[in-house]
Image 1 (cartoon, rainbow, N blue to C red):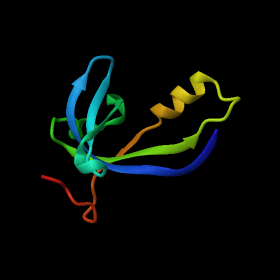
Image 2: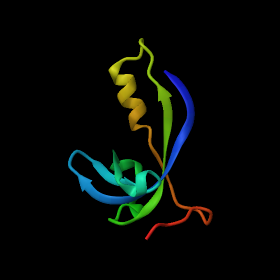
Image 3: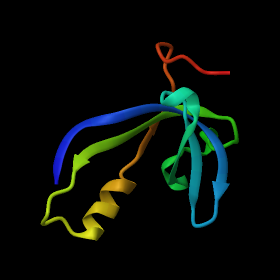
Image 4: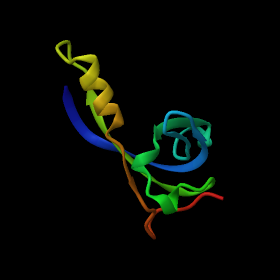
Length: 92
């Protein structure tokens, strides 16, 4: 697997899903029309309420022919959450 710089997106919590995932709307892409399901346990408790906004940081990678499906799944779960800073603009 080839690793590159991380993806960093501002998101808003839309709903909590079964199987310990949370659907977030990606605010920085296509006027917020895209969503992403991330592991709920990667979100701190105080950022889990519906409507909360924060940064999602995820590794950017390219799959290579020798990578196993389990390695790819694990990389997809490597999500970090950070609170928005003063430089990050909340979207109403």
